[in-house]
Length: 118
Image (cartoon, rainbow, N blue to C red; front, side, top):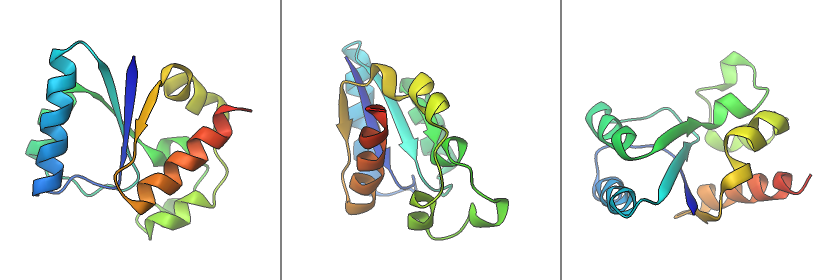
């Protein structure tokens, strides 16, 4: 089993620390976890802890996006073409479950699953 968490960012907050605790428990149960972020706003300590229990990916690595858009509104990143082969190789090929806790995450997850069928 491989679980993918799709989430916007990782500031220091209650939901984010809860997510790290869940991922830590999945890791303890030998469940492979990946996290895909679609922005670059992180609490560095929380991100370092998260990386101990999961593999972290960034949406920007899977889209053909001009540099000046990388820090723009996250939904703009849904409009750019995907690097399908890289996405399948790194993420989609072994994912069995996706956790998307908010609207943006659901939209990004939908784009991932749509392209996994190609």
